[in-house]
Image (cartoon, rainbow, N blue to C red; front, side):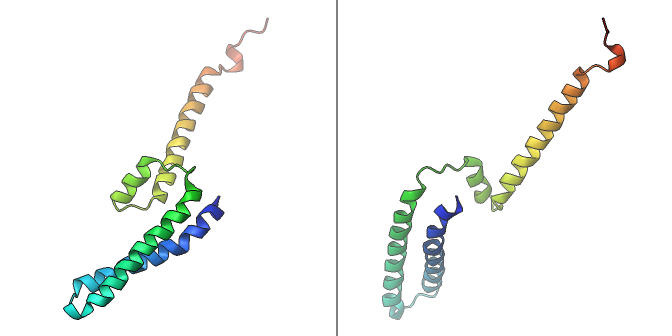
Length: 112
């Protein structure tokens, strides 16, 4: 599964770096930096095209919307997985308790 993402990692890293550099250029913009700004914008567009090419192999992967909510709130998306596991464990413990409650002790069972 991770090999599907390996080819996407490098273009994403380059894209993030270009966006970071673009932000620096824009925040310190001088008319003399117009050429650098144009070049960086072209790199960003090319980076988006490269990412789009990589995503063709990832069309069959679905991500729960809650993961995006975690990201929007600035939380680590791995927390979603951890919390899902914790909820599943709690539910399993509840079900086990119900099963144990329904299993009558042997001294209450009739032996005919």
